[in-house]
Amino acid sequence: MTQIRITHVGGPTTLLEIGGWRILTDPTFDPPGRRYAFGWGTSSRKTTGPAVPVSDLPPVDAVLLSHDHHGDNLDIAGRTLLPGAGTVITTVAAARRLGHGEGLRPWATTELRATGRPTVTITATPARHGPPLSRPIAGTVIGFLLQWPGQERGALWISGDTVLFRGVRDVARRFDIGTAVLHLGAVRFPITGPLYYSMTARQAMRVCRQIRPATVIPVHYEGWQHFSQGREAVERQFAGEQDNLGERLHWLTPGTPSELTV
Image (cartoon, rainbow, N blue to C red; front, side, top):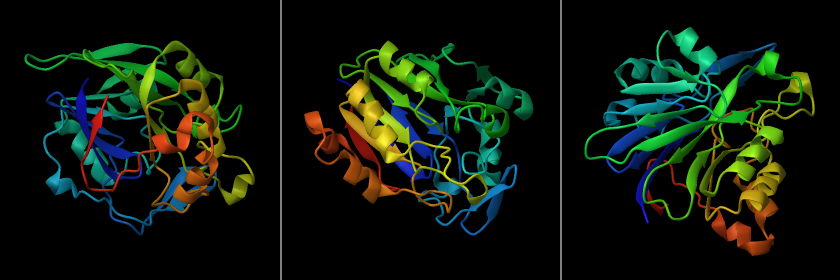
């Protein structure tokens, strides 16, 4: 089995340390208090700052950027990190806007290779950041599935900002997933009423019923005003589920590295 270390910086931002690789997801390091516009009349205020200051971040080999056009997934301080990262893996549209990085469409793959380190295969997974027909408004998003030699419990999947839809179910159908890092929070905006733009606790439970991961790691459910569900809602939804799904929830303490077996 492989041991990895994961540190939750805050929001969607985590630092993954895998066999000598340092991989950062959706870098957000701005202080709290600012309001960010997300387009089409939507906006949100950041309420919690990063648990790891950007100055304390070690050198990063790769950034997995689910999308670049929302400030809760890539903010001003996060953008300053991108030129110094070994590689940036993101959507095709984001790579074009940023002017660098490797853009992937869903199901496309790339690899991290270096002497003395395990080769990490990264597959872009489908994501839809809102209800049906919302992609022209919410923009293109991807998730990431990571595989490397020595995994015995299955792949590591980072959902990205998405609701439950056919593409997410296809990820569960195609891959054996041992660890699921799920972007939750049930994002809603007053201007669009009851519509959700990220997974609800119920949707997360339904995904986990299908993939049966050994470990479920919730992220991106706190620290912003646009989240409508937090930890309590997730725990309540998972409580009493078959196969002890609730016991598979692994809550990260922001800023504190956690060792996981993958």
